[in-house]
Length: 138
Image 1: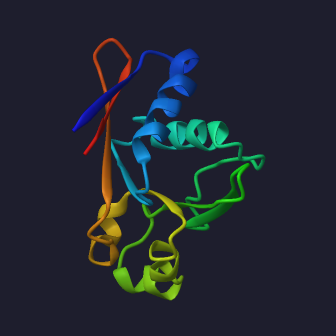
Image 2 (image 1 turned 180 degrees about the horizontal axis):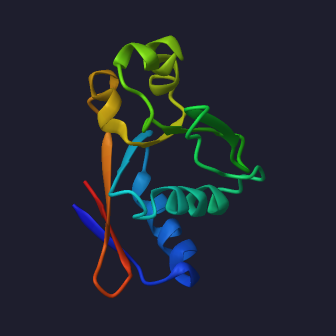
């Protein structure tokens, strides 16, 4: 496990760069943390460093957003908070996204746990008492 530190929004891009260096050839990431921990904000920073030109927002209602990185890679950003049954994710074609070989960043992944690949990387974001965030990559 590797722990990264986000001291403030001023340092989040540097933490995102370090996270990208850790990604290697892994493709599917579950971003875990309490409501307001900064999951979407960190994903936005990662996408920014990867050169995504689109606005990166939480796909709370659409469930999945698609972005293109500067190098042409496709990124799928899921927010599964509103998924109540795995069948809802299946109806959206989640398996096709998850097993596409594209980068997948998933918030509230526990709501689609049966669909997740064995290669899933857990990214745990925790708010510390002093306001900074720690990011543990398993």
